[in-house]
Image (cartoon, rainbow, N blue to C red; front, side):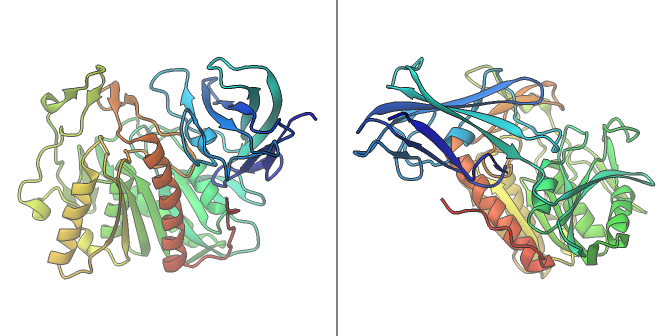
Length: 421
């Protein structure tokens, strides 16, 4: 009997959906190695492998069978995706064109040899970033440079503005996936894209206010308030928007600092001075990679430091998603300092979800953890922190928490539940 490799759902799935990988037609208790590979849009190869043993009937189901070793071990149904590592060192998997999928190549090999035995079966599976029915609308309105993703159906839909961190450009993949869950989501660029400023020495919130006006005036966006989602510097922009701008109903900060960081934040007559940093506090790891976790200046005066974002002004709730092993800065400490500030000003204690073994780049589910890559600020490779298995579990849970938080405070018109493993 010939071995067959199946992936469900068959043929294609959304990136944030789990898949079920199974093999049939093996010999009873046959040792096999499964391999997965994909190439990103720049040609970099990402790969993972794991060793398994078929059951007495010659079947192998990754939802039930633990991996015996390889890129990961134990019961990890999606391990072949989240445990992928790049052949190119210090390379982060990023989806730049959401209109095309990542194509995952899967193989079953006989035995447990490191270099692989005889090929027994193979399959190909497309992992999409544009969920069925989601519409992608490029936005060039006034100064706003963005892409709006609209869920299927007539609307109007609850709206979210999605902002990434240091690096510039326009990243759409998180916004496009959110639209698959019923949210009209604007992926917003703010520097280093088309005719936007080339740097970020200061942040003027009137640009972000203009993006909010665009969303609230859109006939398919349901008001009266919007959700904000940001990671790293993008999280601090979202916290600033929630503090100074109207019509913010809910804010999610992923590994933000709650401070102005390296730049002045300006809105009308108000400015928040930069906290600043000292690169002399950079450490070098045993492997020669930089660790910048302590380069930020101390928050003198604690939560009343003038470089803290005045989040007590925010009208809607704030959810802090934190990686305890974040090496970009001490996100856990900053989240609790922000919490102290809120409570000192008579506000409710915010929800802080803190994940052990989790680094800086908390992405949608199943993205491989990026342990280290080039940092634009120091123009060298830095460590981001995290341990792959814990980081992956954090990403899956954080995504559920974010969707639940926005559904609760914005409402949702679509319930696209992921198939259960």
